[in-house]
Amino acid sequence: MKKNILKNMTIDIICPLYNAEKYLKNLNNYLQMQKNVNINNINYILTESVDHTEDILKEQNCNYIKIKKEDFSHSLTRENAAMKSNADIIVFVTQDVVIEDLYWLYYLVKDLGKNNIVASYSRQISKYNSIEKYTREYNYPSNSKIVSIKDISELGLKTFFFSDASGAILTSIFKKLNGYDQKNLPISEDMYLAYKIITNGYKIKYCADSIVYHSHKFKFKQMYNRYKLTGQFFKENNYLNSFNVTKSGSNLAKYVLKRIIQEHRLALLFKYPLDMASRYFGMRAGEK
Image 1 (spheres, rainbow, N blue to C red):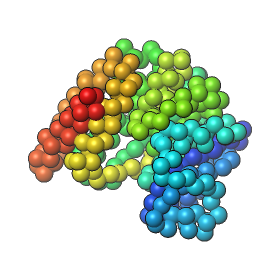
Image 2: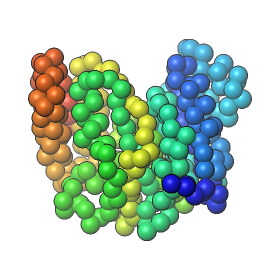
Image 3: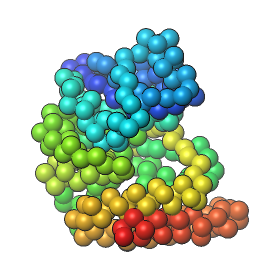
Image 4: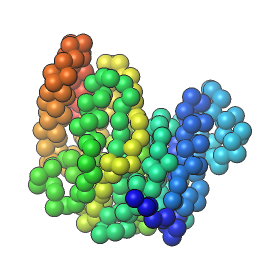
């Protein structure tokens, strides 16, 4: 099928970096090779690192700014860069996503501005045959969808699912909604933004044909700490608790267990209780 070239929509890509030497060359190459899109700038924000990330940025003539470690914020670092953009579309990516498709970006942004769709995010697949494989399946299915305020009654909290590991938003809307409201959010800044998008009457598209690989090997302690931050986020933004947060978590747990059993993954069956307990008790600790 012939793809229409998005000539009239300019794109700024924003990517925070920290100790990213093992990711950067491949990521930057694939960002520059994207087809049928008009990339205005690829903007890297480098938090002071101890590896050779900055050397690679210089070698590849990348556009970047450098900040101190204590100045990094998941929300404010992205917001500061986005507010300076004069492109039509802002695309957020993280350093550890692996792009292998030259049309990843085209599929991500091609419907922005149509039918009140103002933001979009990619499908994420884990390369590890772990519990994360199934959580990714649950959160990033094989079919695209568009959500709006009308879906809240059915989807609850899932209506506000969005990911800035590979996500896009119209620059005008990001600025109109005041980004992250100058808040220093340690996690879930993407959900914070998605809530504002949906409740202001706009739509978000999940683009299943825009694929990135995004994989982690979290230890149970790391998982606990991650969900502790998530619990703190929900405590500080308690208006979200009215959207069945507990039900959303239990649905994920049920899906993962079902898939482990379907694929006869005995080793994962033993890890499953500890993994889910790390998430649950981390959330509870954060909420306190």
